[in-house]
Image (spheres, rainbow, N blue to C red):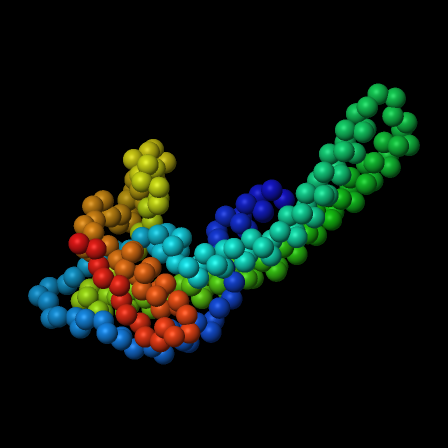
Length: 224
């Protein structure tokens, strides 16, 4: 049960919001600067983790999911606390065998309820996660497309780096990157701020979905 709880809450996120997809796709480029013809191909990168952790809709989805998860968490705690209490009771000296048998049956009952609760939680919250991940993925990619078109980038590569800079040079992150490269993947080792679209895409999406009066996509400026 503990493993499942971590799985559900760890990723974050997400409640259904398909209406925004059609809203976003219907918008024009607004006042974004037109892309200028360039010699060669302009390549940019984006830290997807940065966008998903700072995009306001994604944060709202995560909070709602945690709220929906709370009843399951409370019920699971009640069941596990009861199991622990019955196990402690059985360890006490002089407990009649009949009382031990009764508590063993209670424990079996609670464990079955925990299994049922786990299945229900996966069915209800897991489905919401899937739907919302798809929704956010579409929105983020639309933001990437609009920002890239506005500033003349023909290729954008996604990557994932820790948001905590203190973790960048620690072994787990270094090992993760080395394993990715050993497996044939490309990993950005140096990225100039001017070709990192993480901030621009996040700000663009946050402005875009800020309120009902926000009707046009206006890509945020790039970092220098």
